[in-house]
Amino acid sequence: MKTHSPRNERTKRRYVQYLKEVRGFGDVAIDQFAKAIDRFESYTKYTDFEKFHVEQVRGFKQHLYEQTGVRSKAPLSHATIYSTLNTLKAFFMWLAGQPGFKSRFSYGDWEYFNPSRTTASIAKAHRTPRGPTLDQIRRVLATMPAETDVQRRDRALFALIALTGSRVTAVVSLKLRDIDIDRRVLLQDGRSVRTKFRKTFDSWFFPLGDDIEAIVVGWLRFLTEEKQWGRDDPLFPATKIEVGPSGRFEATGLAREHWSGTGAIRAIFRDAFKRAGLPYFNPHSLRNTIVAFGSERGLTWQEMQAWAQNLGHDSLTTTFGSYGQVASHQQGELVRNAGKGNAAN
Image 1 (cartoon, one colour):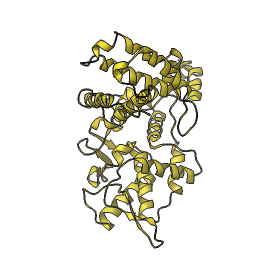
Image 2 (cartoon, rainbow, N blue to C red):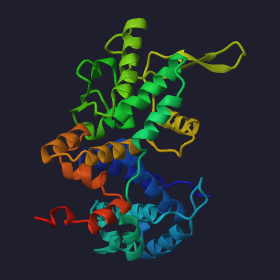
Image 3 (cartoon, helix red, strand yellow):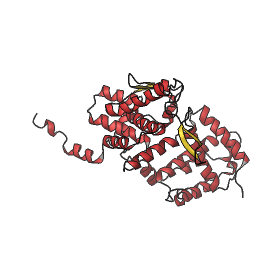
Image 4 (cartoon, helix red, strand yellow):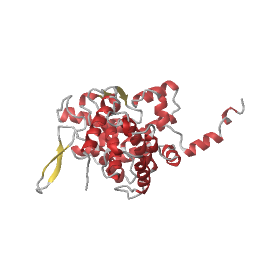
């Protein structure tokens, strides 16, 4: 059974090069492109792209609606189908302009990848983003143990993400030099910190409370004063795994090196919410909490712009449009009571 096409592989390598060098996409986005193309190749049994025909697209679209998730076993979501089809449309639009392929395509063949209006509507529908409440964050931190070095690290990591809304890709790359604890600011330098689009910006601690800040301050002092670590050491080091007394591999402390990926942080969050008896919220959702907290404070326009920049956004529209939507019940209350405060004027 055919498992790949050498010609297709060469073409895909050129496309990856185009995505990186021309479009400026990072590895995560490119992985998503590759996954979509692989879905299509698998359906066509790795037929060479040169033999493309719109009937393949019609069959593939029906095939997508019949597929289920590997882990969930549920039908693919409209969002997944929408993203997959648009990714393939972009790929074949590029392919149609490449030497050796131009004669294989009729103008507009790639338009057959357009998702249905129903799928597009459901996939693009806005849903109010959710994040834990500030009380839930405090509950999680209160129930997280802090007896071992690893436990103290996990608790401080959770606290820092709550205070800054930093993305996990940035957090795993942070060094001790990237935080100025006296000024309560995280210095996200895109040259060394893996920020989104490698942007450089400062993240001042959001005013969530001295108790949460104290956890991070204590962690910094532990690393610099007790452990005597230096500026180039990781802020949140990976776990050291060694053969323990039982003869099995065990967590024995902190490795003086960065995590290789972000999975460990998500596992920390999952375990922390479970311990607190709360539903799981991923690390990114704490950005929703931060924006909701800011909205409740009645920020001025200038304060909202500072809030946005603190999260790495150039525009407050991005921050309060993507993360700051009014919750449904609040929306109804605000609409029903609009203008009442000025009725007597």
